[in-house]
Image (cartoon, rainbow, N blue to C red; front, side, top):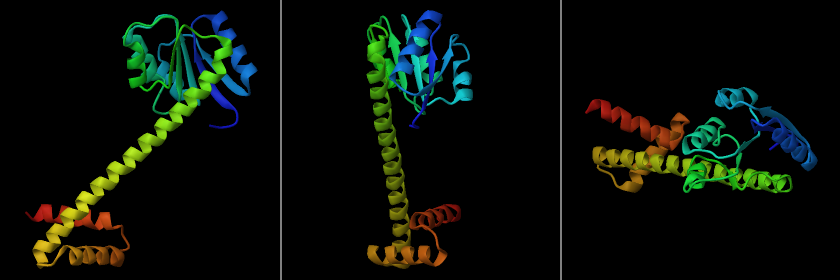
Length: 194
């Protein structure tokens, strides 16, 4: 996050929005914009590209909660949601939708900064986990393709696994490409010939 974070506050009540803005400004440097009407929230947030979204809603329904959470881009930025009351299962639904912090019993100014800090930290942690998971999946897929290509070379040339790997690696080095890319090209070409 940058030194001065930009925050969008989704709050329909003007007095409450003023209280939130005052609490945020007292907590540190930030650029704050208020969205009073949550219709077209996704477009407004996309246009403004905030660092954090803070949503204050009295009593959300499951549909409202999911719409607000998804519109605020929880996979792109931390989202903190403050509610006065919550039905059973709504907190779970909010977390599953990507909300970084779901706070029941409303928004109190003295709790705002620590909750936002926790939401940002949680978001960063999940962002790292998503990236690691994506990289692990990609590596596993590449490993499968390399193994298939080695199997094809072993069968076509009548060589062992180590020699098939060496042939594949040499081809990658000769072409200046990644091993996985050469393996994928071989598997694709073989698929076209069969």
